[in-house]
Picture 1: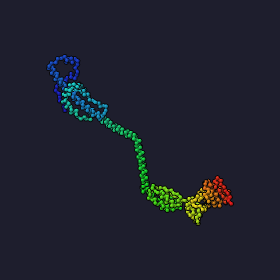
Picture 2: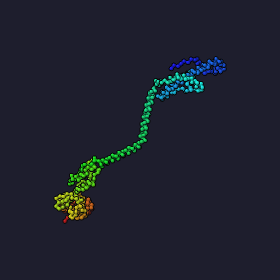
Picture 3: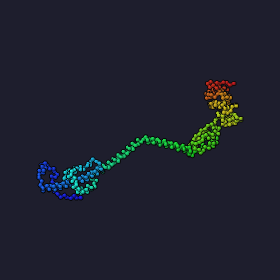
Picture 4: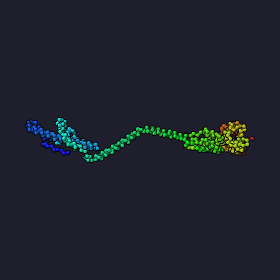
Amino acid sequence: MPRLPFRGRPADDREARPASADEATVVETAEPTPDTTAGTDASGSSRDRVGTLAGAAGRRVGAGFGAVADRLREYTPDEDHRDSRPDAGNAPRGDGARRPSGGAAGSARDQDATVTDVLDAGSASRPVHHDDAPIGAGVRAAETAREARVAKRRRRLLERAEVRRFTRRSRHRRAAWITAAGIVLVLGVSILVAVFSPLMALQTIEVKGTNRVDETALRQALSDQVGTPLARLDFDAIKQDIAGFPLIESYVTEEAPPHTLVVTVTERTPVVAVKSGSSFDLVDPAGIVVQSSPKRPATMPLADIARARLGSSSFRTMTEVVLALPSTVRSQVTRVAGSTADDVTLTLKDGSTVVWGSPDDSDTKAALLAALVKDHAARNPGVVVEYDVSAPDNGVIRAKD
């Protein structure tokens, strides 16, 4: 809005220049006339009004520039933008002089400046164009925002690292508890599956080590365990079923998941033959008849038990002596006899006899007998003698009558 011209006498230089001491003295000593006094009052009021209007305009312009500077400072917080707003008490007037603040005159002048304030309101409220911003302000703003994002990201990473460092022990404890719980759970599930699930039920029975024992009959005797989970097999019942086969000396069971049971048996081995009527029974050390044969076996000594029974102490002593003999000597023994447990004698194929005595130190006596037989065969082959090893420290060879 254009500003209206002010009709009045322009201010001379004396209004903007302070009076000297001489002029002040002249003014003070001059006697004013009535006409002069009236003209002076009119011109003074006009000058005051002009000064008031100019001061108000300066304040509005300064406020506008200050708003622009504040806006620029928000976007570019840089030291190059300084606050150019003047102090409220030192706002410049239109003639370049400082406007005094305070007092009754100041308040009156502020009241007279309302018209100019209205005229300048439009210019003060005009939008500030950013074209007036300094060169590079947008670049600095973008760099500042990017640095802020980077700093925020670094701070987040540092906070996360600190949290992990302070919670490391608790995380380790939690991992240990989770691992232990997982192991217990897996074991529990495995036990349940093995004990109650039909996935681990017995379906196949394998028998190993049989020679004289009927394998099919043994498998049939154990068939009542088929369909039972391997972890719930009744081994007492298995023992009773195997006990019905006297030729089995011992056995070992082995579970082969998921569906197999392996039974490895050890059959009884006969060591002596006992004449029973017209046949010969092959008997093991426990007195169990393993097999019966109509003919006497050539590789097995004949036990003369007389009136002793199978399984008696004297019979067990004879079988113990036979088992202690080395293979080279055992193959030459044809007969073993013993009236008591401490009086065991052996008969060899060449007719020589062996006085064994008690079963004590049987291993030492067996080694001594092997040495005596070898020495006699080298010195006097074919001569029937008697070997006495009842005293293992002093073996004797006697000529037989």
